[in-house]
Structures are given as structure tokens and as C-alpha cells.
Amino acid sequence: MTLSVFRTRLAGAAAIALAAAAIIPAAAMAQAQSRPAAGVPAPDRDVWDLTPLFKDRAAWDAERQSVADAIPRLLALRGTLGNDAASLRAGLDQISAVRLRFYRLAVYMSTQFSTDARDNAAQEGSSVIRQLGADIGAATAWLDPEIQDIGDDKIEAFIRLDKGLQKHAFALRDALRNKPHTLTRDTEAALAAVGPAMYGAGTTFQLLTSSDIDWPSITLADGSSVKINQIGYSRLRESPDRAVRKQAFDTFWTRFGQYSNTNGSLLANRIQAGTAMARLRHYPTAVAASLAANDIPETVYRTLVTETNKALPTLHRYLKLRQRMLDLPDLHYYDIYPPLVHLDRSFPIDEARRLTLASAKPLGQDYVKGLEEALDGRWMHVYPADGKRPGAYQTSVYGVHPYVFLNHQDTFDSVSTFTHEWGHGMHTKLANASQPFETASYSLFVAEVASTTNEMLLADHMLKGAKTREEKLFYLGHALDSLRSTYFRQTMFAEFELATHDAAERGEALSGARMTAIYCDLLKRYQGDEQGVMKIDPKYCAEWQMVSHFYRPFYVYQYATSIAAAAYFSEQIAKGGARERDNYLAVLKAGGAEYPYQLLKKAGVDLATPAPYEALMRRMNTIMDQMERLLDEKR
Image (cartoon, rainbow, N blue to C red):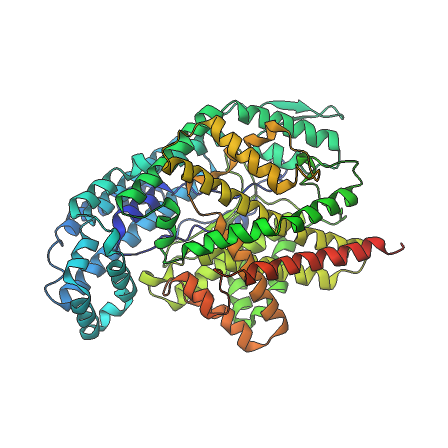
């Protein structure tokens, strides 16, 4: 996933407050993880160098104070922007400069927190940053209303008169578009000021699940003891021993289930904040408000859910194939993670680098050269460590190279994660090189397209090089598992978000028990419990409590829409030539200069129609056809 999402829209009050609340990134579900041998430090190049951001925390704190001191000057700009084109440009440039400095502060502290959530100074710094973001938002809350009062005609005249306004043109027009949903100056300032309180539940969730829960241990058949925290659970859920998988599932979800009241309260708080904000801004629903921020039609979300439910027989076909390949008498939820085929091959971090570069060759020499530069630098934090959060992400701030956060072990899953995150990293690198700060930061809606396209290119590269039947089955199976988890699983999460927000908007109480019931219904439907495909143990319905993305509502659906778009682009790149490649790269270089739905539609993918999702299902069924043919072959 990516965190280079700090958008410099003029509608800054709530956006800045939300960015500040989200500086502790919502990581993807952790891959199975290991760490370097005890006492063996990670090589320098595998630990990121944050000095391009700040020399040390003292420098960070001095800059934080300097940014805080600049905030009153932003408030003093109020009432001056309509004087003339030069005043508008000067004011917007000043606001942009402060925001860029804030984002640098936020990224530095989020990386500190991610690598050690136990660090009290990082926890305190995160709190300070959230407040600073709220203060900046409050000091610029007047901006959108003032732009809207100046009016369309005058703003367009100013843009024509002053070339320096070109970089602000998209945001200016976007502010005018949002006039029906913009509140008074004082109300916008008040909402920005309470941003940390409204959007801080995710931080509490991260602290609870990463640091404060006393995770139990289990004893395996060989006598070893494993702590069933998120890392231990993620490792053991892939065990070839079914009894171990069941033991890990039962232990982990029973312990999580003990926190359903607390986690239910935290998530309900976040949902209520979103629904309240949607009502205040005159949107019919929270999902409409979320999508409207980037001018994405609500039909995209609804079409995704509808088409995915139509495609559940394809998911059920996959589950039956999984049962066949694992040679199981029946199928349970703890059977979902072990690889379909075992491959006796290690993938250390240098191999991940090599394979990622090789698979990127269809994107052209310039892309590969830029990727080589990135992989040679100290731009990554590679290995797990005590207190380090699980998962993986890419983060960045304009003017500084991307940073990639990993928890690498020597598996192909880790290679796929590596490739995914560097898809984000190269997206950021290309957008920053092609766009000014004001339009470089791309929408979440398009962010996962780059990462997932890279994953598909990797899958195609590995399959082409596979020599044996087992190798082919392994890479096909990995691609199939990715489709399940990235498309079906994320859409199931998206349906959960719809259901919980709809309930809140109807005025219904949301408790942990209610959320568990909603999630359980979805889990059973998607996995085919009623059809006898997979039996769901009720204790596993606590799974919703682990999904940190829910604290960024209406985020996860974009994984599913993105994999549909990625399927289109990867196919075009593989079959086409320079024109098809450049068509894709143009999407990445555009950054946030266009609305993301229209950007993808212009490039050939209309995600408000069934076509991309139907194409993705054809790809999934084709993979299963290939696997079944290989399974039917005589050895």
C-alpha cells in the first residue's frame, strides 16, 4: 500500500486534519515474517536513511516549531486572495510551502513510529503532529469559502493572467466544484480544530493491537513455543500442518474476540465521525462523501459490489480447487493461507531486487533505470524487529525520494510484496518528476493500480521462466491466491464498510457484537458456507477487528478496482508495444493532475461498468483452467 496520499487540495481544513490523524499508516495484512538471526544487524542499505528528511529529532523539533510559528501568517492571508491574480498566487504559494513542510514532518514521525511503536518519543511526536495538522487546517479553513466567493469567472480570469497560477488551477477548480459541500469559514475552522478527536481512533487501535494486547503463546509438536501475535499468527496460518493452523486460528481469534467491545467502540467512533461529517457537508451518505472528494461516481463502488457478488461462483470454484490441491476432506477458514504448491526455493532480499528489476523490463529502459537507482539507495526498512509494525507500505513527501517499509522473509510472498511496494515507489517517483508539488500526489483510487500491475508483471515473468510442472503450479497458484485476497477479500471488506455505515446512517447502534454479526454473514456468504464450500467457525468472525484499513473508511474497495484496472494494463503492456506502455506510464506521470476515475477511463478502463470486473474473472478462470490441466497431466 501507499501513503503518498497527502493531497494539496484547497479544501484543506478537514483534509489536513485527516492527514495528520493518519500519519500512523494503516498497514496491509502482514505477510508471514521472520527476522535476521539474533545479534546479526541488518546491512545499512536495508535500513532506511531518514537524514534527507531531518538530520535528527532535534532538527525535526526545530522545524515543527518553525511551522507552528508560520501558522498565524496563513490566517492573516484571509480576505486578500481576491484582490488580484498576484495576491491569489502569492497566498496559495505560501500555503503550499507550509503544507509541504508539514508533510515532511509527518512522514518523518510516521516512519519513526512504524519501526518501533513502543518508542514513547515517537508516540508523543505523532500526537504533536496530529495537533499541528489540525492547527494548519483551522488556519486555512477560510480558504475554500473565499475561493468560492471570488467566483468562477474571476478565478478563471486570474488563471489566464498569471502563469504562476497554473499549478494551482486544478485545486482552484476543485474548490469551486465543492461549493455545495463547503461550510462557513468558522464551521470549517471548528471542524479542523476537532480533527484529532474525530479521527484519532485509528491511533488507539494501532497501539492496542501492536503494543498493549498480551498475546498468548502455543506449544508446537516439536516442543517449541510461538507467541501468537500478528507476526506469529501470520507465520503459522501458512503451516503445512493443519492442526497447527487450527491451533493458531483458535488462539489468535479467541484473544482478539476478547477485545470486541473495545474495538467495536473504536471503530464505531470512526464510523460516526464519517457519517456526521457527510451530513454536515450535505452528502446523502458517507460513501458518497468519500468518493466525491475525488469526483468518483458512487456507481463505481456499487458496481464493484454487485459484480463481485455475481462472481462468487468463481470464488467458490477457487476454494474447491484449493481443497483438491491440499487433499483435504473438507475446507475450513484456517485452510485459506497455506500455499497450494510448495517450492523449494529461497528468495532473499537481493533476489527480490533482481526479480523486480527483471519483471519491470516491459515498462521500458527509463523505468528500469529509475528503479535501479531506487533499489541501490537506502530507501527501505527491510526486516522485522521488536516493536516494528507488521505489513508493508510506501510513503513519501515531495522533494524527497520514496521510502518503502517492509517485513521481509525469504519467501515468494515477500518478493511479491517488494514488487508491489516499489510499484508505488516508482509511481511516486514518476509523478514527482512530472508534476509540481500541487498536483504530484495521486489519489488512492489510482495508487494501487501501479503496485498491482507490477505484481502481475512479476507473475507473468516467473511463469515464463518456470521449468517444471510444480513451478508452473506454484506461480499460477500464487497469482490465483492474489486474486482471491486482492479482489474478493477486499470487496468483502468494502461490503462490511457499507453495511456498518448504512446502519449508522439509519441511527442504529454499532457494538462489537453487531459488527461481528455483520462480518460473519459476509464471511459465510463469500466463502460459500451455505453451499457447503467452506465451513466458518463463529470465533473467526472476529477477523474484522484486525483490519486497520477500516480506520480509513472506503479505502479498501480501491484494491479491488485497481486489480481490475491492473489486469487490463498488464495485458496491454504484455501484448502491445511502446504505445501501450506509454499509455500506462502516462497514468503514473499524471499524479493528481486529473480526477482519477476520468484518468483511468481515458486510458481505457471504465470502472463504473461491469467490463473490467468480467475481464478479471476471465483471467481468474483461465488460470484455474491451466492449473486443472496441469493437475490432470500424468506425472
